[in-house]
Length: 173
Picture 1 (cartoon, one colour):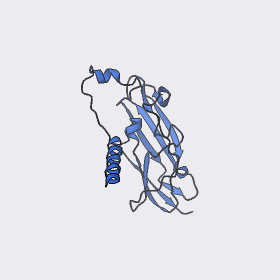
Picture 2: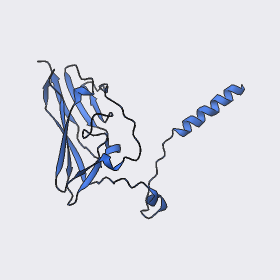
Picture 3: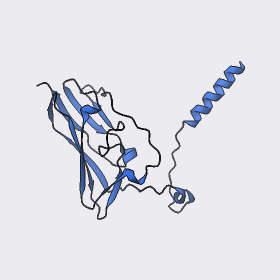
């Protein structure tokens, strides 16, 4: 019985250490705002769009074009983590077939130090855009003919918003 109490206590301690705390800072002059990291901030004037060919033959590359736009009058920046602006280092896209089944992510999964260092940010000049392209076949198990939907889910890391998903038909030759 004594071992049961020790195991239960250790489990509860471990689970409480894994909890997520969400803090919303509403006072720009507060001590917590002053003590935050000096990592560059992401701007709301940046947004991204994805493009993909509507029909792709099996065996061809499944290239997704990811473009970040800056509509502001000044340069802005975003974290390149969880975007195509760095090599595939994590799952930041949901790829689903016509039945809604999510395709297996088979790429690398990197652990990151937080906050992201300044070198992790990419600058976008005013009224300009940057584009990166990735081949989804290098990280996702896309092998069957089907209609696929791609949704960007990396906004919590990059700060970029992608409002629309893209679809393509992967068909036999």
